Length: 85
Image (cartoon, rainbow, N blue to C red; front, side, top):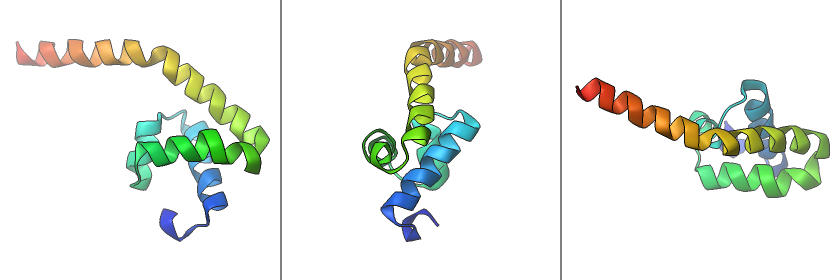
């Protein structure tokens, strides 16, 4: 579905999914079957010109994810070692 959309439509679809689900770039990429770099580029570069309001909402989610990523990584490692015991 995502590849049949135009570039503008894809940006809006990706950003809408990100905002509605408060998802990470990785989750969006996995959900739509595209690369993380494509998702990130569409949201940070292309969306700004297409839909400023949606861009600002998506940017806020990306900033939150960026601030929390070290916590998520540490938690994943902790759970991994708990399972191995």
